[in-house]
Image 1 (cartoon, each protein chain N blue to C red):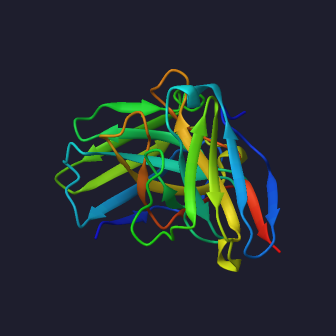
Image 2: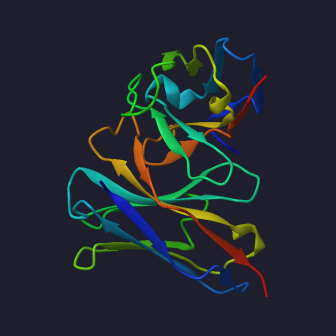
Length: 108
Length: 123
């Protein structure tokens, strides 16, 4: 079982805003990063270090955190955003990485 | 531009040892700025961190796999490797080599991924 919990699936209408959440006790101490994975591809980092985007990631992707919950927000979702999204952080002990179970985002 | 090129067999027999290598180009594997790691993904399932290694040789392993995993680095060849012993069908997965930024311990950041290698455990 994962120390980080995500909703298995979320849907959003084209152009609307969607939040994908990640819960875990370790998030009170460590930040989450977020990865997008499309079918047949390796995951890609979309948010790191609280709310930073790598070069090439659209600014419609943002993140926030409160207590034991980290959130990825896509403002104005596009068809190409349909993918699996994973949060990642450290476990409670701090020495190991953990992933959430992933959220499948469907853009309607 | 960093590139991670994975190599290794796609089929391993049960009870044997899975071995994969990741070749690093475009940056120094001896940099103190990064950890080098492995992550796997069973078909249709989520991501599982296997472990990481620092250029110094310090290693960190997933507790659930610790007894079977060895990650090593060969700085002269600019490669790091994964060995997973006593494999079963449950180890069938796509295996990714990765680079993790070391400066952000409180905010893990995996900025590069290899292309992935599907390893099937079957007789």
